[in-house]
Structures are given as C-alpha cells and as structure tokens.
Image (cartoon, rainbow, N blue to C red; front, side, top):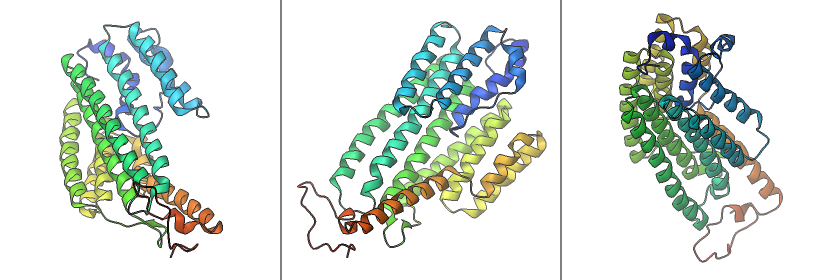
Length: 326
C-alpha cells in the first residue's frame, strides 16, 4: 500500500498490507497470508497487522457463537490494538473497516432472516416495520463509512479511500439484490421473478460508473488484486442486470490482468465466477431453498394459505383462505 512510508518498510510488509486490503473488497473471506509472514513479526507495524489478522482468524474460528457477540469481542480487541499505536493511522482505518465489513454481513443476514416469512405477501405490516428499521441501520452504516473516509482523507490515505468507496458500492449492491428477492417471490414458481425495477437499474448503472473509476485508481496505484476485485464486482452487477456484453468485457479485462501480472492465484476465483459462483446468485439460491422448505412445512400442516395471507395494520385474521392457499 502507498502510505508515504520508507520504501524498505513498504517492501518488508507488503504481504500483510495486501492481505489487509482484501477486507475492503467485500468478499467476506479470510485473507490467506503466506508462510513468509513469520519473517515480518520483528517489524512493529508488520506485527500490528499480524495481530489484527490473528484476531480475524479467531473471529472465524468462533463461528458457533452469537455473531453479534463475536463482532463485539473483535471490536473491543481491535480497539486495544489501535490504542497501542495512536500514530499508526493505517491500522486505524483497516481495523474500523474490518468491523464495518463484519457488521454489514450481520445486518444483511438478519434482514434476510426476518424477511423470510414476509415473502409473497402484497401487504405486510411486519415487513413495513422491518423496512423502517432497516432505513435507520442503513443511515447509521453509511454514516460510519463516511466518517472513516473523512479520517482516511485527513491522513492522505488515498488507497484506503478507494477501498472504502468499494465497500460502499458493495453495500449498495447487496441491499438492492436483497430487496429484489424480497419483492419478487412467486409461490407458484417457488422462486423469484427475474426483474429489475427502473429505479434499481438506474442506481446500479451509476455504481458501475463508480466501479470503473475506482478500478482505474487501483491501476494507477498498482494494486492489482484490488483492481481485480473491483472488476469482479462490476461483473457481478452486470450479471444481475443480465448484460452479457458488459459481463464479457469485464471478464476479458480481468483475464488480461491475470496474464499481464502473473496473478495465477486468482485463476481459480476467476473460473468459479464465470461458472456462476457469485454472491447474489448464492443468496438467491439459499433464500429460495429456505423459503421452499418453509412452504413445504406449512403445506403439510394445512396452513399454506395463511403463510401468504396479507397482514394489515389492524392484524385482521385471514378470511376465505383454503388450506392449499387458493
């Protein structure tokens, strides 16, 4: 990362910096650090990043515990690391960004879980309450991102600014495809209607413009993996929009990037992406399977009609609903 540090220091812990950068790409995966990391511990700044990576490993290894509590533990310990290095602004940005990334995953998971029972209803007061609460969460999350971006700009950490912009784009895209699913469940199909609203399409096209600009920034900064991940986001958005031509253009650019800079480690991810391994695809499949299972239980219990019955503000019970939902 270009943090205006001495060249020797940048070279010494570039591996850890690249690993830390992955959190901004929104892929939700653990960064894999080569064995060479043990050689970097003697350096104070490298050791600080290593502490954060070890903390991240502990977070993922504690998957059986409550997710919210896990984030709180991660946050408290990350803040202790920051407190020991008040002048090391880079670790402050990375640690806070990591927390925001984990929070985003939790918020979206809870949103999907709470919305599961509302799919297929035209009127649902519970869904209205959920949407209102979500607006508050969204405002708070974007405000935190803005504050962190302001901090990064204050310390002229321009790479971090690009990373945080990508984090915001990922957040906006994930919101859109979540709500797209919630609003387009079709009981008869036991799946989702393939449609994108004009408003969402306009928003996504603007996000694609921003992705292109950020990819150019990464190119100038010579951060190839970040550049690759930003192009992948563009590919996924275009896939959601069903723009085959734009998808092909993104894939070609990613392939050239891999070939030009020998990014062979990304080949597997690239091939999996082309075969359909994309976050929105996996989300739709998972949500459809869970809702179909819920419908089957309701059908077997003779209450499938009530599952799809509108729920108004007066909480009136369903009327004239047969067990099979007709």
